[in-house]
Length: 325
Image (cartoon, rainbow, N blue to C red; front, side, top):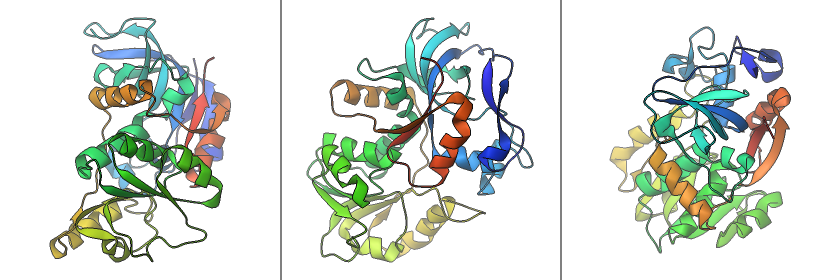
């Protein structure tokens, strides 16, 4: 099969190669998916470059990548199933998290897949898994967001942000979205009640107060963000950036340091894709409350450009690699 292969850490144009490799075989509880589309995440950039260095210590390989084919988000058709798989059969349309999804075929654990929403294309479904699950877990579990509460989303036009705006509205929250001038109309269409154009206004210099802040950018000090919260409000820092050594983990460490000195909650989170949350997202999509904003697509043989676009930090909605029609 054809796949994108990486043998060393580095920039996408230097280390990602399009070549022929053996087709993977599913394990006992795994599904082999014929990939139609694969979502691209900032995590793919980090794993590809090996920076921040904590990525390497987290099991991805200290000197060279342990996984030769990158990619995790996937949407496609079941090609074969392991002996113990009971939920899927060949021909089923699925989406979720797999291993090595920048390829014509990829394996995925049965409990990290769900049936593809009927109204979504494969490209749209491929954008959902990591970004959508992160948004659900941040708002529901970390933020404990309730109907009627006021939420601010900084970075509302990116992958996680576009899902967060829609999910928060489905939960009954009042949403303020922070984005650039080119995305004001987009986040309004997604349901944001208020929109702040960061090129014209600093959202931290306001008298507004919020029950929750979900920040994917972390371009303001913690102190400025905490000041915007109600006395019982919650700050959810979720940026993946933050330096060569710790990256986004730096924000989590800082949150733990600050936590004892404020009444407000700090709730960083490491998301994990599960079938239950994929089914929550599928339900929202099928009810018309959730859609994927596909900002750009690239074919599999041009995946390096897709990863670079995400790594540049200004992707609109989701970036997707298309594999099979």
